[in-house]
Image (cartoon, rainbow, N blue to C red; front, side, top):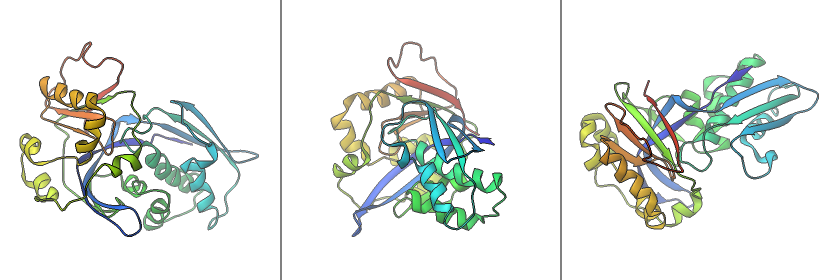
Length: 272
């Protein structure tokens, strides 16, 4: 059985305060890219449980992969056979697109369907939250206003189906912990949720900001240049997603980009 875990973008990201547990409280809107950027994930029964990776290189020990962690977590409560997991990575690592979190959430749902576990929607969210802050979002996979560590969310009626997106991922891997260390948390002066619901998309440039850009752009000025370049070719709104390093632009019509973003991975498509 196979599925296709999709990426997401952040529209606005406020880092509100540092928590006593070492994490940060944030505010952001996450929007799924269901038909634009995705991995491929397959599970089959096997003699032993293992994961096989292909596509984009995934650094680190494969035993630390979130899909394997999800398998072992769920196996504490449900009887599972040994399986072989094949994960083909196409969503870049360290890109602010939530690829690893999406893989984990889709894997939980794939296990549930493959082996008829009858895990409830609430239980799947419970498991996902234990694997990572963004994982729970991908269980529902709908536009959501997220808060807390990024694992608390309310669905939000933001509809971008009349627009196109252009993702630009340069060969830069940004460590999330390091990105947080360069930010001074602060309470936002405006309500991100109200701006997303009430302001025209043509006003987002004035009001909606990703706090990570303040420090990340200083270290990687080439990212700020990509953002400015996206505006120069007609983007209505452009931003870094998450802690980077993907920069995206939202367009009414897709522009010509020949030779515009050299040495970068480019993905384009229409929002659904």
